[in-house]
Image (cartoon, rainbow over all chains, first blue to last red; front, side, top):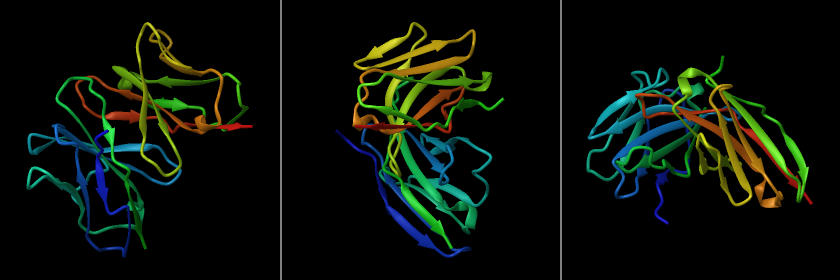
Length: 114
Length: 110
């Protein structure tokens, strides 16, 4: 079964540093997402991405966050200047173009900001 | 009202038991519904979609009551491997995002 792969699986970074989380979606996926889950809390939507641009973003996704898919393969989430409260599991997800199609999640990148 | 609300549990049940989880939703999360399963520190995995007429997949049955804005998941003949957190998930009209509940923890013991 094809998988969404994410790197790194775990990263520890100092507050104020930039972090880039990478995702390789399933090859036939057209819609891409980032979600995050703070420890002990619910999974929260950050951003959706289609046709090389953001289609929707949440209030969490402020100017410190950005996404891109520069080479048609990797889908990245950049946090420009990390804060302690950015510590969370970040999940990349994707789906095909069919309406209502299943969204597949990657295994997540655990970010710890110290 | 929270968009998707669940009892966090935990539900501790013996193997072979039947257990039911409930979930309520608000108008902002009311287009489509799903149950996801999440193991500790793992990604959410789709368990089943929830249809208005109710649907069954093996030991799992999902029900939707739009009038009461209520969704349920029934697990029959619980297995040890069913131990996980079950996430009630909705999506809203004209948007692509999933709205997650906080999850209900299930622990099945021998």
